[in-house]
Image (cartoon, rainbow, N blue to C red; front, side):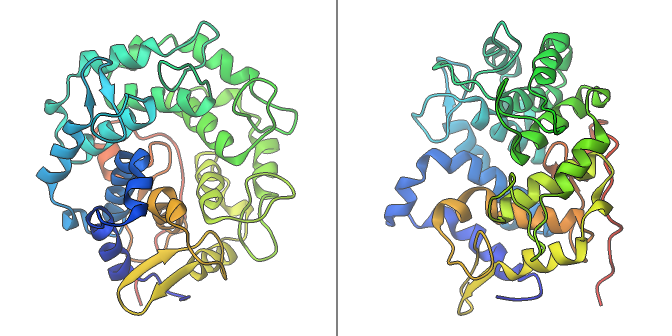
Length: 334
């Protein structure tokens, strides 16, 4: 464990993620591959090392995940298209300024085909619905400049129906509030310029109550803290301009203490201090969740993250898409 960010080890770890093709874990996580590349690239950008991955190699892999029949992207070559991996492909291409290599009309058609009569989105043709997929659709359409093709009122109406008495949101109508679902609903409403549908003070209180005595944040009441939940809670607080409602110093210490290093070879991240890391957490969200949290918390030496789109803030600003989120002022390196 360390009280400082081990940048060089994290960069090395991300660079080596796709090279361990002889490991069983590599094949067990094929369904995470494209998402993991997006998260890894974003983490590298936040650490100021976007060149650490070969641009053309990454773009070629993205193109190899294209599902010609569906008009979207799968997680791995020959996998069925899914809205989640389609967004990851878009985010990677936007990061590399390579949207010209994307068949935008077909992708937009695929995304819009997944909206259900109720207004919620399914993840793929098999029909699983979740407010996560609604956020993903809104994020993707916005990045592609095609948000005007979305039935916004029907979309917002469904999100409103997922709002609970505690101010939070669930993954569907009637589901309990969860910090991950709170983030996707708040971010979706921010992109649609409909944050008026959020009870900001009540939700801010609920989010602040997710902080435990050790500084970590949990996903819902009576659950353990977890670094990835820290990202969802902190991002939502940033969008609502309520980061100051939690103890940010304790959260920073908690996040940094979740780092685990094996000698000088690799940087790993556990779900909480004292635990050993597992490949499913580290391979996908957790590696970048910690870095994104630290960016919002103003940790020195990092690049600003846009918490609405989960991408480097400069890229979102250049596309004219920045919403009214607020992070802590960036501290200077000592």
